Length: 316
Image (cartoon, rainbow, N blue to C red; front, side, top):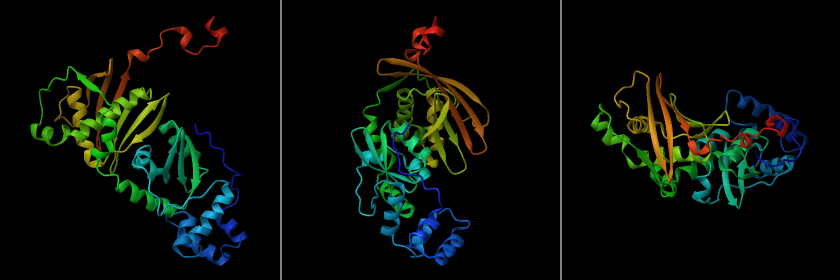
């Protein structure tokens, strides 16, 4: 959970506050609200687009209202290692941008610093204390596009992690039915292998009980179940969906060509000195195949009653 304490909450609508502060007129507010109908943009972005207010005025106003610092993103160079802390899918979902890391703190640019779901998800994902700063929605969207597009390909994004992921599939026999061409062109590509290994190891490190690989019409997302709650962790490019599922099938010794029937399998993974079992379930869906991996980590089992968190009187 994030430990950030924000200033006084804004109880009145932004437009009314801007009018009361003399930054826009009632007529300009009415035009902006009419323009906003049916759009996904926030009122502040509409006001900027209509040139009713300057970005510096809006950010300064939001900074005073929320009681947190503001930031200008247009000329900011962000360390790629900091960008990797928050996947592009999460940055776009919450319209946030990681700015810098200092020790156990992460500075996060937000257009809505009161969004506790964004703060908590980023804090949980990074295991860092999130310190929000305010920026306009338009500036954050531009900065997300500019910075995440400049990160390079999937290989570059995984390069820093691949050296740390020392995994081996135990008993990785070749399945009886394999589309050799598909296997050669997709599932055994180095980026896909690194991505799958990274996800499996990351789930183990985070103490997840399940990994969900879910296909939708336009996106493919990966979620972990941790303490009974599903958390979205990564959204690989949709074009890699088939290759990722094929790789999971190869690892669990399943029929790579079968896409119409459910399949169940098992992966035995050696991670450093630990052997971890994954129970694999694949189901066909309307937009592709879905995989669920149940993680069975014997070393993480707490068989001693004293480690299960009972109160002393309950334990007795």
